[in-house]
Length: 179
Image (tube, rainbow, N blue to C red; front, side, top):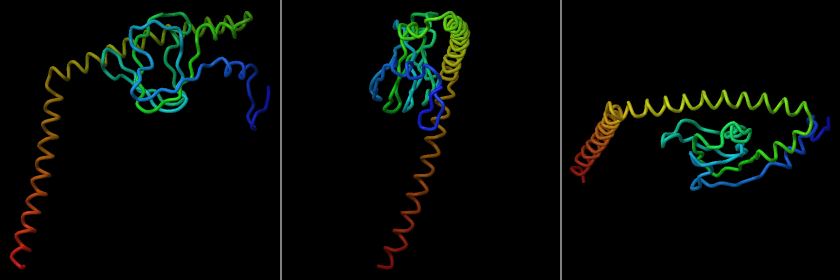
């Protein structure tokens, strides 16, 4: 292994890094939209991005987290969620073609097959979890939990503002009489 900056670098790491596409995304840009076809895995290098499933935010990606391994590994061609930057993000993209260029020997191919199995299992679990979150969101909206919570917040705000205005009124009444 090579030593770079005091760190031991795995063989082939520089080759992997050279294959990554770099992309700068702003909070106004969709990175990936649910339902679109693709074959790239996204790695968040800097910034934060929301995972959105059926218009419901179901998760957050921060530096080091990935999305899209089933597409990169050929398990699924359609993205099962959308990726929306919350902040300006620096992303690294690994395509299926780039990954395959790394797998030249039998050992690498076995490694990719095991990754594919893990990606398939992760996709199934994520999809079930995302569907559950959407059902919960719809249930909360139908049961009025959002409205009552918002009404409670509004009542608290009104009480606070009322007490501030009352204190101001008392202050003005007290000191206007002395002038």
